[in-house]
Every structure is written in structure tokens, then in C-alpha cells.
Image (tube, rainbow, N blue to C red; front, side, top):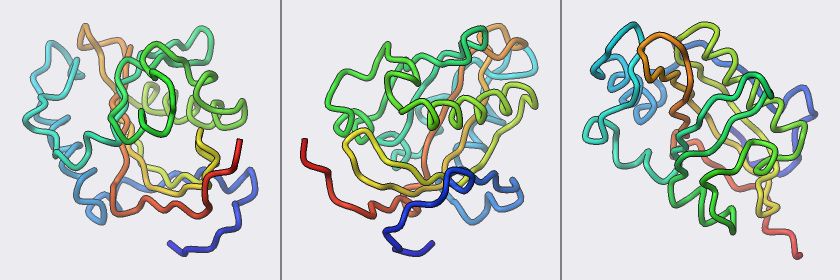
Length: 172
């Protein structure tokens, strides 16, 4: 990734990456390993065991409840990196309370892809964060199912080494 401070065009803000590239992202690879090895009551795990998720992922992790009927998701948990930048309690907020409409749609489409395929999704993201900074990173979404069958939540996190802050906070 470059340190170019120019935002990408809307069509370039999200790029799906093949899971074959996962080996380039050790924290995300460890999260997928934990997901694959997590206890299951069916095809999918309901959660990831905390002791199996790398500590480096926690600050960037969000647990989301899936709300497909409204094309949204609700934040159940946000790691401290996410929470500090939000400047509000993230729990209970939906994507549209967290992102502008176009970014909320991009995030929802990634969630829907993970739900439909019932498999991890890997993507490069470029967007303006809640605090006004232009950011880039590689993210992972893992589908979760409380009954082991129906996707009703997600584990979403970032590979810390890919996080770039490209512009300073915009004054309010």
C-alpha cells in the first residue's frame, strides 16, 4: 500500500481480496484459524473463543448483529481503537449511525457476501473515518450463527499492519 493521501474513487473504496492472500495477513489468518476451530452446534460457530483470537486484533474488532431485512447491522461490541475514534458508545449503533450512507452500503454488502457464502471475506478498504481521517486497511469478516445454521452475526476486524491514517483529523 502507498501512503498517498488522495482518496480512491467510490468504486475503488472497496476491493475484495482472494482468501488465498490470507497468508500475507498473520493476525487475520489466526482469526480464520480460530473461526475454523471454534466449537459448533452446526455448520457455523456462534462465536470465537477469546483465547484463540490474537490480542493484536482486539482493538480493531467489531461484533455485529446482522439485520438483513433493513440492510443494516447493529454493533454489539467495538474494540477500543474503534471506540476511541467514534467519540460515542458504539454498542447498539447501526452501520448507518457509524458510516455515511455510501460506506454503510459497502460494509453491508461485505456482510451480506459473508452471510450468503457462509465463508470469510477479505477486502481492502479506503474510507473517511468517523473522526474525519482518511484511512486504509485490510479487513476480515467471519460469519457467525447462534443456532449453527442461520447467519445472524459477524466478527469483523482489521490486520493492524495494514492500517494507514492518510490525513489528519478534520476540525469540527
